[in-house]
Length: 103
Image 1: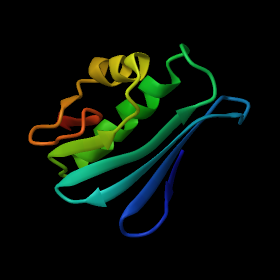
Image 2: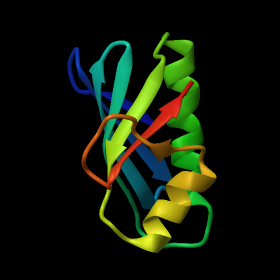
Image 3: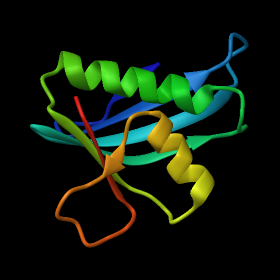
Image 4: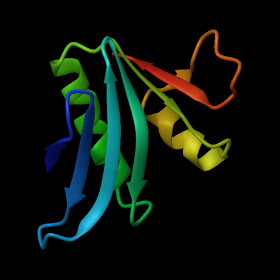
């Protein structure tokens, strides 16, 4: 499910077949960069975050974005998730928690 929140904001909601909300993401459009503001899943380890990220990456590519940027908590499990999705430390950013994915 995808909702339009205005010219620069989009949200993504992931639901089960029964309609239960299991994940949510919010992005901001600063073309050519898409900023991932928030991604939350109700349950970890079920692939919901990966499903959301796949949808976000596909939509970003389709809409001509060159990169996705995000800031995350300095948590090994969270950083591992983003690294598995292809994100790396953002060049020229002093914050250790800034990550980028070149599309």
